[in-house]
Image 1 (tube, rainbow, N blue to C red):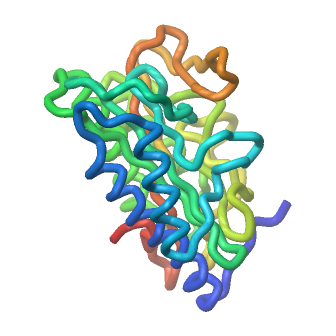
Image 2 (cartoon, rainbow, N blue to C red):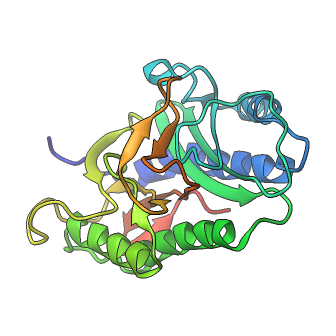
Length: 251
């Protein structure tokens, strides 16, 4: 399937839900303190999105029950918010999607609750830094697999592993479009789709300790790695405009 090429006016439309995602993530970050719960944050974020003219696009997507993916500690992505209060030393990932006028935005952050141990802080830092490393190396004409290689090399150089079987993706008229953008290399690096002006996509490094082998917990959503150790996740939505990557989900 061909990757959509968006006109500038379409990118401006996509930017509206993307910016609302960015604001919603800041709200989640501010609320992420000792004693807060995922359910409380989920409700506040949902209300904020609706109040600002958006629709929480994750709610009901493929059957997901809430508006925000809240992924605590060993849950790397797709966590379901619950009523268990956050504790000092937890790390929590928030992944938020918004739809406005048929266009979609999507981004994620991982935050520390109070003071965290050294390895947890390193997980957060490396997932965030991997994302920006990918973005700063984007060039029109390069293949998406080259971006995957950049992610893989950066993650592994810091002693971590990319989560397997999950990826970044195109986004626009639906929350998930082509291409699929892995954080590791499969197949030959000189094959596959090339980055072009007008493309809009999400990059989202998901990193693990010990192994990238993924498992889904009994709730059918929460993704962990095989050793059930803590991981981290960051995501931005990018548009390629005049040969440069523009971060749509940055305030």
